[in-house]
Image 1 (cartoon, rainbow, N blue to C red):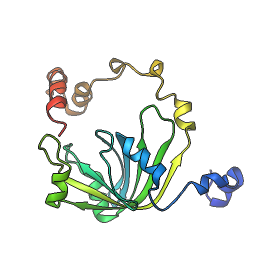
Image 2: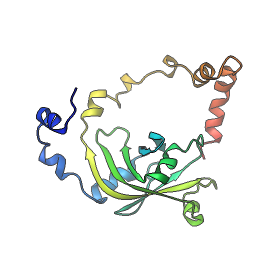
Image 3: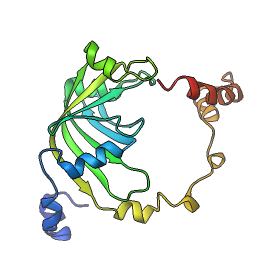
Length: 201
């Protein structure tokens, strides 16, 4: 087992100069394009109760670039665990990974989060008259793009590699295994489509 930074560096050597040069402390014009076209991101946080890695998604451009050092992300209706938000209250450091469908490169933002429920800000993110619960403001510390090797190796965007949902347990059957035989998995799965249609916002 490797236990020191020196041991790691012996194996991996120095990072490529371009890999270091692509990191900047603000959102420039090129990185702005990734954020504006991304309908999906992953939010990573850490706190006293543990780590959290949470998906966030909406129409492309749902992450608002307030300025080159500040992003705003609406927090839509969810399961109310609020693991990420709990972490940010205690430890504001976070990381975002933006994904653009069909594009191999991803964009990473490291920064610090603040949670706002200011009325005008919430109203500015309304969809069909429905407001987010809060808005996560991200003070940007570093931005850089990841090359496409991971997505190329995974062939994530190749339709031939897409998995039929039926090959996995349904949401209802997963919940039944966790909840016990009294849970009605069939009813849950039948109602899921309607819940998704009416409960996204």
